[in-house]
Length: 343
Image (cartoon, rainbow, N blue to C red; front, side, top):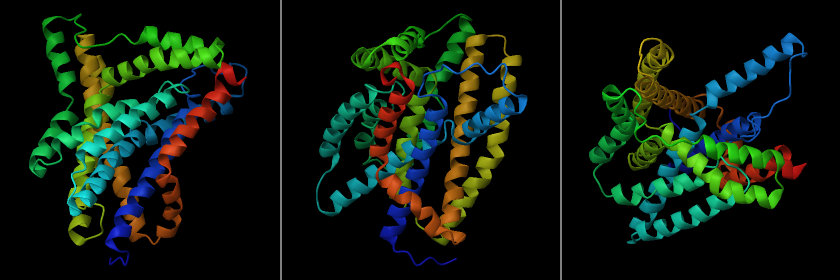
């Protein structure tokens, strides 16, 4: 199917639609989690159909967006770097130093966001994104190999082999429980300034430790590099060749997703070593989430280009263009609603 959109509009509009949908998914999940304030009303006396509805909504939203909306968001961070770097290269400029300064600013913005919300990701993104100016002049093949290595979770494989030699080995694992307890106490009892103090230290350590322990560091680096390659290869533009790649990717993602999720569910029953089992489950879930993310991305591309729903989807583009504003705003509003300081 021919599409009359210009190359520039294709690239920007589709990316903004995807970014808007990703941020929407992130905010929905944060909302039902009470922005990491895991204190929920007692539903013992509630009608069974209401309990069923609550669980159905929770499970459905996490099935659709859990680990996937964030992945799309990270993918597009890599894509936006390519757009900025390519534009500067066309003008004869080297964007890398300027980009690294922007990462410093993003780190500061992320810490401002962390004052309100413990599970913010901008600080982690600002650190891991330094990989992009380091690899952006490499060949496409080299970057793809590095991305695949990161996607396969090398740290978790190290943990698996370490656990084989010592079943109780918790090598390279950070104990995050103390940090989360401190943030929960602040959310429950502290005033605004005390909550900010705890969130900025214990909250950030808890968030980064959680990301380290759950494979998000290497997965995020992989997604940044894959997003960069998505821009370099112009994979978001509608061409017959790209269309073939999209649906090949869709087919392989569908083929791989179900066995990976199946393995993640059954492995704990077959592996006696708990540490090895935990890492293997994490590897399977991480790859399964990546496959599901690919399904979502291809689904949006198909809907945008081939179903005549462009105008409907473009309503999400302004939301995507202001993704950073919305991401910061949801932290402030959410913490006000759910944490003690807003009461």
